[in-house]
Length: 617
Image (cartoon, rainbow, N blue to C red; front, top):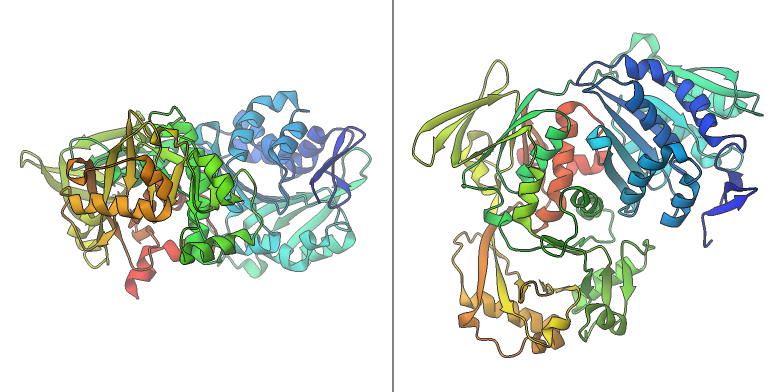
């Protein structure tokens, strides 16, 4: 089916399910009656205390109207210092143009709808996490089947449910007993639900799942709807959990992208951050390269790592839209080609080609189309990422940390971590040898290999990975390059007359000296995957080339270590070569864990990221 959306008498209509998205009388008022009033949200939002988060979950995102109305009400009545999590699942999302057309009907929602539309163009299959209203409202959107998404929610996380998955007779899968049991599992004790439907078998399914359900007057021509509340049987509170309260203070160790992203996310929640960096500025070491490639290199298998990279790629694009606008100087959205230049790459790309991907995310292209996109002849086709490109990591780090709630301490080497009655104490020396200490409720360790100096991390299997990039002067011929080209390495379009080519990749190698042999290796690899581009660079004397080397860290399996290490002690480590993509989502995840909010990733990926179970094995 070419289009999810149709129109009937001026109202949006689902071609797939043969049903309307909302009442012809007024979708806006229907949402307010059924879902906002049905869950008593105005009074519940108003009663939230500072530092608390309220969580709404929904089956069927549709046009996003329910979300926008809930976010609007939250902004109107919730006290300052509170936040809203909104989780929704949608198997068949609207296109950009379809969503724009439906939301254009509601003039009073024009401003938040415009923000939603900018996030929408960054959507990826699976879980998406977007911030709105200055970070006060968080939308977690699972673009997948409801039976796949709901069991991946944490237990006892949701305060209110919007059950809105088209008419049960037209979309019975959304209302199955298994789905309703998952709804109940995700509820806190006392959580509520509402739905426009009052079908008897839906009511019975909700009751069997543990809800006390009652019929109430519906909206417009709909005589009845249902509301419900969950109470754990026999006073069982084993799955009931009160939300954590957002801490007032935090220490973040490490001023690279991982640390700055974590500090940025926490600052959005109003936490006072002390960002500790041993260098004299942010964005040094592995975050100090002149350019980093925004390359969503994910696979077709269901394993956690490719799923993480997919989710992180979409999140990174949305986050960087906020803090690092596309200007051609610090960030370029020039597109990126991932070439099928060898058998291994052809197999990987062939598997991806068997799946359906939205065109705004990636396209499968042949050599002719790849040549057109690159501006220089390509010998191979592959994957085209329209939103791919490059960013300047030092500027990204600085922009992420540019917040009055983040105090930056440079030239401070952190050496020990100690528990205190109120949280944690970090001690060390500055560049003049003067001892210093700092205390906070929580500590986030984001300093790559340097984490091993702390006793709590000394047993972590962090491995150094050295990489060197090469700077090559442009030529009249190479100036035609329009996009980042990737194979066993990468080459970016010239900026200020210089191409960046990279990168070597050697394990257990820590010196950051510039090596001419590595420059030669980068050029040799370019010859293998893009020979015409290499020829366009002309005769190059590797002895005269410049570049830079830096050391990242990795762990076996290449899955980053993100999560709680001990109570109040967290880490974001081992991002390897993917840090530009994964660090932002890692910071969002840590913040959700610290503040007791809905996590931005499914449980299976959270378990794979968690440092303690993996390190303990």
